View (cartoon, rainbow, N blue to C red):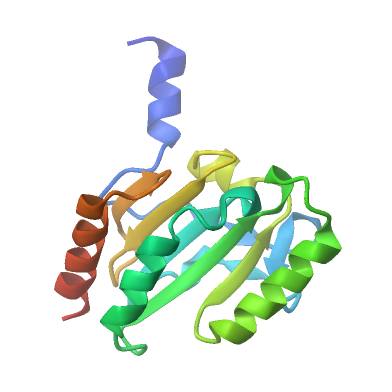
Length: 166
């Protein structure tokens, strides 16, 4: 294995570990309300994190519908949607409007704007895609996949949530 390959692999997300801390504020991004966002909040309960290119935002709607039907306890399970703002041709004002509408539709979900692909750079998430990450209560990554989730992937995520919210 080459030196650069080893460095790249060391920087990638590892299942069973807590990813490097990221804070989005100012020009790099924020919560929808403009306040800073920190990945330090990803602990204390099971979190499902979506890192999404707005151009493929409907790719895993089949998964979202199955997830909603599970009606997980909000005290033990949370969701965070991080929008890769630089991955789209859509203007910022349209994205902001869409995010505010989504926040009203899903008030328990945390919505975040990544304006400079910080998660792509720091966590090596797939750019211009739909990334799904699941974290246990301690903040360790227990599932990661980019792209469209298969039926098997969906069942795996739902089972992992059930196992980890106990």
